Each structure stands twice: as C-alpha cells, then as structure tokens.
Length: 114
Image (cartoon, rainbow, N blue to C red; front, side):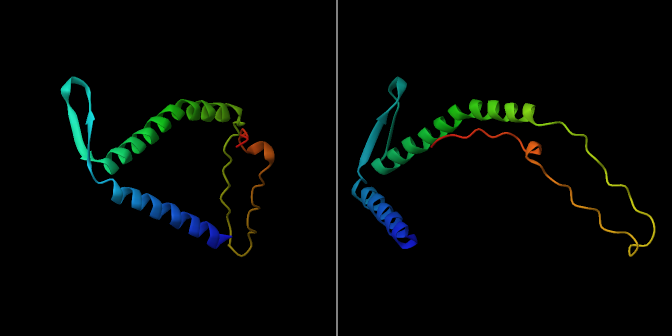
C-alpha cells in the first residue's frame, strides 16, 4: 500500500510537471486602471493557487480564534502548585510522584466528521 501511494504521488507530480512544461507561453493578467502583468501561464496559475490558500486561511482565522477562546473558557483554572524544596541528602529523599492527568484536565475538542 505504501508503494501504491508513492506511485500515485509520483504520477501526480509528473502530470503537474508536464502541465508546467506545456504552458510556458506568456499570459497577460489585466488589473484595474489599465495595469497588467505578463508572466508564464504556470506562474499565473501558481500565484492564483497561492492567493487562494492565503484567502482561505485568513477566512478560517476568526473560527480558529473563537474555538481557542471557547476551549480556554472551558478549561479549569487550577492554581499552579510548586514542588517544595527538599532538605537533606539526595540519597534519603524519594523522587516526587509524577502528576496524574485526568480527562477533565484536557481542553474539550470538537469532533468534525470529515
């Protein structure tokens, strides 16, 4: 299965590489006020893809912030405990027990059906 996925990724890469080689002609993108940009078609497509990624990520930011705020509000605010300093020889002191973590200590996470 691992090799099949590797072959699929290689096929997608070579298909996109062939697309890039076949579309090296100049394309003109016209903006407002008579400005334009001339570049190879591959760069125009790549710029449109990158712009879509940026706009999509910026569109998701308010939801991420709202989710973080909701998770922080649900998290219990436990006071920080300090471990007391031990006195005496190191051989006579036992190591401190590790703190246990329960399910209520973890923030709530929404499950999305993807």
